[in-house]
Length: 203
Image (cartoon, rainbow, N blue to C red; front, side):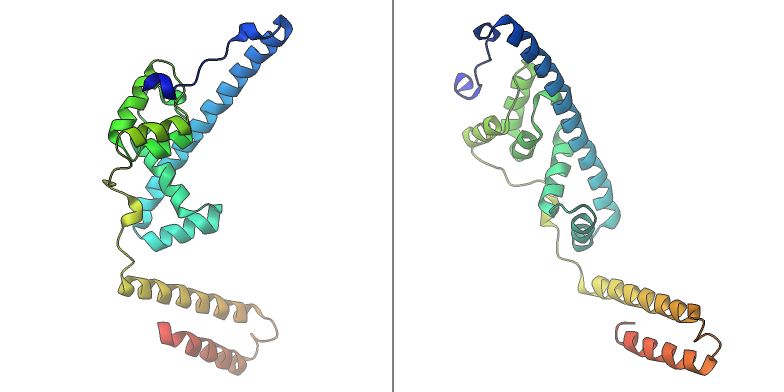
């Protein structure tokens, strides 16, 4: 099994001396960048996990992630899973970030992958998928964030009301800031009353 999924190492003797030196230097630099990429992904997962716990609301978390960062909530959960399953591994630099997403869903495959990483083998996403397949496929998630219950309607209604009231309050302040309206108290009161009537349905 192992020999079939582990790619053969590149033999630098196949290239000329002047090319070999440059390729070895490229290898070192690319590995540095890859490590930064992996560590950044795990750090992102840690921050997303903290934000998820803070919001404690699936829909709000999704809106925050997609609205602020332009990534899907599924990608966010993948980063969170990678952080949860691999942040404490000593050989994490040997595992591609994409491979972590796959391995996080099968404990047996994860353990095998870590053994490869301990031996200095780079665990790719392709390799991870093969390991998961041989281990019986993805397992049922233990604490999959995506499986949270839907937002409570009453809680969502309170949130909507708070947002609406905040918008009305801002609009009232904007009215006060209009120099041609502020001196005219009667006009101001009519505008404020109209704004409040618009928001009354959700207050």
